[in-house]
Each structure stands twice: as structure tokens, then as C-alpha cells.
Image (cartoon, rainbow, N blue to C red; front, side):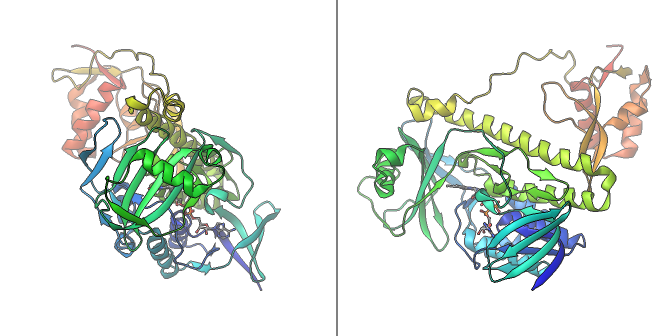
Amino acid sequence: MTDACDVLVVGGGPAGSITALELARLGYDVKLVEALPMPRHHIGESITIGVHHQLSHLGIESVLESGGRQVFHAHEERWTESIMTLKPAAPGAATINRGMFDAACLERCSIDGVKVIAGRRTRSVKRVKPCEWHVTVEGGLALHARFVVDAAGKRGVLPRLRETTGARTIALYGYWSGDGLPTLPRVFAGSAGWAWGAPIFGLGYNVTLFVDRTAIGRCGGDVHRAYMEGISDAAIFDTGAGPVLRSDIVACDATAWFEKASVGRDFIKIGEAAQSLDPLASMGVQNAIQTAMWASIVINTVFRRPEAEAAALGFFQDKILSSAKSHAAAVAEIYASNSEGASLPFWARRAALRTPPMEDAEILEVKTAPATATTIMRGSAPLVDHACLCGSYVETRRAILVRGGGEPVAFLGGFAVADVINRIAEGCAFGELQEWLATQVSTRLAERLLNWLFRNDVIRPIDV
Ligand SMILES: Cc1cc2nc3c(=O)[nH]c(=O)nc-3n(C[C@H](O)[C@H](O)[C@H](O)COP(=O)(O)OP(=O)(O)OC[C@H]3O[C@@H](n4cnc5c(N)ncnc54)[C@H](O)[C@@H]3O)c2cc1C
């Protein structure tokens, strides 16, 4: 059997499902191949409020309940202090059963018109010529597609070109039941690694240990021993408690890296095929969905606005690079915050990846919009061309390069900030700008915008 489609998605995790869903909604003929019958088990069960916002935006937040979501208002932590402390959880922090959650996402794809082929592994993905792929799937199925989305997780199905951004880390995990189990999530630092534990709907209490890759070798290749020693080192269970390990222990790589060739005119790599984040951030699922949402817009641009292809591809590769770097910097700070571990190799290696503090940026004289400003002029913040998301397309817009680095800013609250610069002439009256902005956006946004414009020296007062 041979079958053709516009876009073929390989992998039915959150990244693959969301891209397929979005593309089907944009009117494309999409097929998705998932190797395993659903529901299949998967690690990555702690989610942030960001996932809820993303799914609400997509109109499918009910998949969280189908995924057995449990929300926690507090967690137990032993990290910066040597005693366990009860800490308020980040708003909306929750755990899900990934098997159930991923199956629910995939079901939504089918409802929205994606042809889902589950329980069959993609065997080979070959480019016959540019924008023409030939894909073979277990069971003698042959598929043709113009565009391929690699959403096959860590292993991916397309050739890799990866750069590591964190220390080599291995994760060991298993599920526990029995007496004395904690009822809240726990994050505990040990001397040679750290452990995360949390109740997961239908599966028990997951305890995952994160250690250097050499830890298993030091235990003579005995995964069980390495896990038990790590759990005891991090003291994740209370003394005298009687939890029982009721699953096999799974070992998997948990090193952070990103893909240097994440996108081309007929392929894109998303989710964990594009980027693996340090699990400390609990952002893997959110990131998978985010890259999927970007990917659907990039693909739509490549298909329907070929003149914007280069901007769309550049947009995606830049996003992968900048999020990899910013996550790496953020988690290095968290590792460094375990001051007790500072002299121990596991912690020192990770803390060493902190980025040096930025050089003192020029101090701005004006921090907020001065009440007395009567005349304003253009400040020093440069305007640059920048690829950004505009509805269902990537477009190049004028954007403001702000001090201290970071991505240029084209929109604030949906308002194109460069319009202010087009509007003002040298020596423009501040009141005129205020009046004009009031006709464009809400009073609150106008106030925020003006403060932001002054703070970043996009505009500056002349006579104060
Ligand atoms: C130890 C550990 C703990 C983690 N903890 C968290 C956490 O707490 N919170 C969090 O948000 N993230 C966490 N993550 C990250 C999270 O698991 C991933 O970011 C997330 O699963 C990525 O989703 P995805 O859709 O890209 O890939 P996946 O969910 O891995 O989906 C890929 C799919 O592709 C399929 N596939 C693979 N090869 C083929 C093929 N040849 N043909 C067809 N199908 C194929 C697979 O069967 C799979 O279903 C953790 C990761 C690790 C390693």
C-alpha cells in the first residue's frame, strides 16, 4: 500500500500530536505514525502551569483531566538547606500519567482529521528529491510526503547534529507503593545527585534519581544497586517508612543538548528530537508543545508563503538555540544554589556552567515615563528586522533591540512597538503620543508601553 500526504509526522508524543493537530486545523493532509500502541508508558510526568495555558489556547485542556492530572499546592524540598522544608508549589504545578495524557492528545488529532497510524514503527525516512520523502513503516506500509516532522523523541529519525549544553547525566526511575510514602512531590539533593519523587495517577509514587553517567559503572553496571544507593544518598524516604519498589528500574539519558540543524525547507525536528532540557526545569512537555506550535506555523509559512521561507526557518533555529541557552543558564543557577554541594564533583560540574554576569549595562537615567515630560525624541535603542509570529505565519517585522541582549521586541501586548517610532518626529509633544496611543490600545497597555519605551531608551524626554 502506498499513500501520499502533505506532512508526515513521526512520533505520537505531545510534540507530534500538537503539530499534527494544528496542521490539520490549517487544512493540510497530515499523517502521524507512532511506533507503539497507545496508551504507552512515558517518563516526564511533572508539568507546569504553562502546559495548561498552551492547551487552553489550543482548546483541548480537557486532555489534562484525561491524563489523570493531580495538582499540588506544596512540595517538600531539601536543596539549599540541610533540613526538609515545605515550600509552596509554583501555581498550577501538577503531575500527569503520560501514557493517558499522550493517548488523549493523539485521540484529539484523529478527531480533527489527522490520519493516525499507531503501533507501527517507522523503518526508514528517505528524501527522494527536495520536498519529496519516501517513508517505510512496519507492516509493509509505504508513505510519501512533501514535508517530514521528526517528533520521535530523543532518538529521532533524521540524522542528528547535536550540541550538549549540560553535564552528562543519567536518570534512573521506578514506581513505589506501600506504607509511609510521601503524599507530596519531593526534590532532594544528595551528595552525588538529586532525586525527584511524586504521586502519579494509576502508577504509584515515582522516584527518579539524576546522577553522573559514570554512576552505573561505579556499581559494576548494576542499575538496581546504583538506584538504591542514590535513593539512600538523597534520603528521599523518611526513616522507618516501608515503601516497596513495584516496577523495574529504567535507566535513560538525561543530558541537556540541542539540535544544530533543526529545520530545513522540507523537514523539522521538534520536542525532544530538537532539544533535551535538564529535567530540573520540569519543562520538557511544555517545550515539546511550544516547539510543536512554532513548527506548525513555520510549515504553514513554507507551504503558503514561500517568499518568507528563509525567515521562517531562521525563526525556528533561533528559537531552539536561544531556549537551549537560556534554560542551561537557568538550571546552572539552581545547581549552584545548593551551597552544601559546592565542593562535590556532581554539583561543582553543573554549577560551573553558569554564565558570567553581564557587564554593567549603561545606567538609564529615566526608568519610567516622567510625569512632566512635555517633549520627546527618539532614543538610542536600535531598530532591526526580526522574524516573528504573526497569526499563522512567520513574518519579518521591525523590532527594537533592547539593552542587555535577548530577543528583539516587535510586539508588546499585541501592539507593534516600531509604530511608535514611525509616529514620533523629533521634538514631538509627549501628550500627542499619549493621545494617539489611547486610540490604539487600552489605557493600561498604553501606560505599560510608555514606561517600557522610556525604560529601554526607545524614546527619551527632552525637557526634564
Ligand atoms: C528522566 C526524565 C525525566 C523527565 N521529567 C520531566 C518532567 O518531569 N516534566 C517534563 O515536562 N518533562 C520531563 N522530561 C522530558 C519529557 O519526557 C520530554 O520532554 C517529552 O516527553 C518530549 O515529548 P516528545 O513528544 O518530544 O517526545 P516523546 O514523548 O518521547 O514521544 C516520541 C514518540 O515517538 C515514538 N517513536 C520513536 N521512534 C519512532 C519511530 N521510528 N516510528 C514511529 N514512532 C516513533 C515514540 O514511541 C514516542 O511515543 C523528562 C525526561 C527524562 C529523561
